Image (cartoon, rainbow, N blue to C red):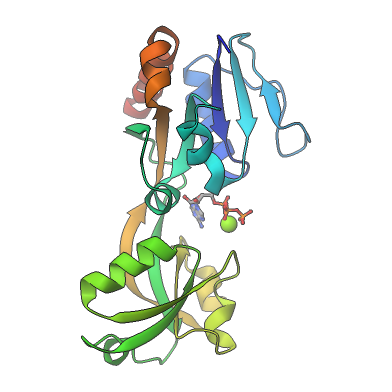
Length: 214
Ligand code: ATP
Ligand code: MG
């Protein structure tokens, strides 16, 4: 395709990206929240959006099915960055990646060097690295959602999950015991596309960067 394709996920990333798109002179022709279309045109005939699952965004961009994408740092860490250029922290969809445990659970005791802890998460690679750096043995249990349930029913001692307000943790008598890292969404660009289509891609990158300054 001669034009450019931007991969976005529905929900908060889409909503918080709209002002950045506007700054680049790009206005989607449909709202993906209500439309069932997965390819959405824009006011610019040379720019289209593809609507993907948040965890799939780096895959589309890495393979060049999309030239650009917007993905959470959580997703990028888990996926790995091969073939991706990450020029901008867009500072949207901000939250933090945390360890949480049931209120009253002695996390310090459970994570003494040499001890073993069972952790449920969808962030297997990131969690493995975090506990390895602490010298704690970890049994990781892969989940795809509702991580908060796992410690409540004895599936795990702890979870590694994203937290913003902490409301979901509190509602389930869980407490944040460790922040692994702050999270925000990043602009990602296919490295080959950047070389071949720089004349079209660089102005979009620059417009996003300008909108962040303002
Ligand atoms: P689903 O919720 O449909 O299973 P998902 O969890 O992959 O899909 P979202 O919940 O929309 O997708 O999250 C997409 C991205 O938004 C995450 O990768 C993360 O970077 C960011 N995010 C997730 N939860 C929050 C939050 N509570 N506050 C701010 N940003 C968040
Ligand atoms: Mg979610």
